[in-house]
Length: 288
Length: 288
Image (cartoon, rainbow over all chains, first blue to last red; front, side):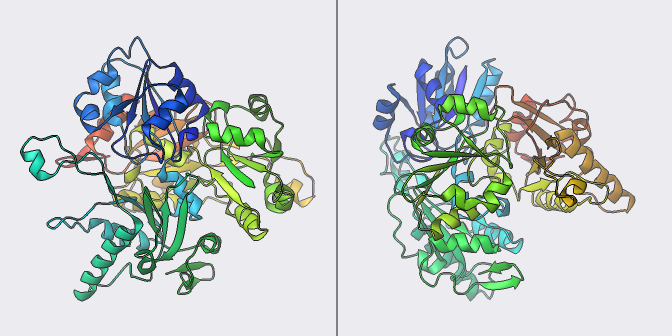
């Protein structure tokens, strides 16, 4: 049996009881470690589980999946994923390989940023399409996420922005030379995300475009969701540029229309003056 | 401290290790039991946790929240919610009461249908706004969810449809007489949901409306997600009307545009011929 086990978002104790039983009973346990990270490291997990973990980087999962699935028809293998196994990243490819090889699989679900972000007080019902923000480079500055956010806002919906993670990435130079030297891990902060968004807003304003998001749009910065030192800040986009939310992982939510109860929840973690420009749309809906 | 603890979706062992530690250490433990149910009952949970649970129905949570929060500044109280505490239902009201009373709170997240539905193979990235389907009555047949599904589909996005639950509901007659007699619990099935959708489609077709969803639209029926006997079926809407997925809880996903990998995943649990009418939109996207 192949078990895909979600680890949740905080630390080792966020695994489910069922998940922990599975980990303890499996003959091999892989830890997927390229799409997300727990605030605790591999060693802390190994100690907590009492089990050795095999780090599964992108190469292993994409190119050597057969190694993961080896003998999984006669023994139990676990594949651990931060969050939920089908959350922000889907591991459909591994599942399909198992199905095609006649290996049964089972999913042990857990919280992912896709649902846990509801704790900021914005109702998950009112979220539109989720978007990803990638690190810009000198030559590659995609803006498509901005248009999706605007589309969600036009429909009154909030947008969860997943922020880029660069783990075990090679520089183009090292890649061309075939050198397996990796750059230091980088995790996009809420500040960087807000800054990229504001650059787009400024550029489009200069072009005379009607703006769906502005510097005054109320957003929520979320850091280390589920961990003991989780941080959450409701603030305008321009306030978020200089907001220090600490270490990774960060996520950003751009609000759409707000129900009064959502505004009350945002107020719990709001920067001073962040909510003062809210406009009332009708008797019971606010917008920034 | 007020702890809001997500129970996940399957059985007692789907609680997180951290959540279980909290439950065991709290002086009072409430079980929210009107927006969702686990496939195991209250007694099974009590036995598993070794702890007595206080059933929190809608009246208790909405009208007697102070009872839940009583002494929570000096003792620990847990409020258990199936899925994630801020998943399909938000418990913002209870949290705000705690904040206003100066009682600290903490959330122990878990899987909810909002993220776990990703296991059907449709990427959560590609979901639009979630909708709710309510039981129709003789005099109340809302159709707004249909329009939201069409809007999502126009944008290429999938739609998660949460299906109605009627727990501890009074008949209008008993309500008017002030009699606290409750109707038997009812849970909308995928069949009923598909039937309501098809009735709307037929009515709108007669009115000459251009249809965003038809009887041939590929949907996924999901039952008892996360439980041992979870069932999942990819089928056309008309096939789902007669598909038996067993006991509650059911959810329905209406697909938007499909990536080939999503199609491959749907095929794993597809009814015969369900996917044969897929049209290719461009080199790499399908639609039904």
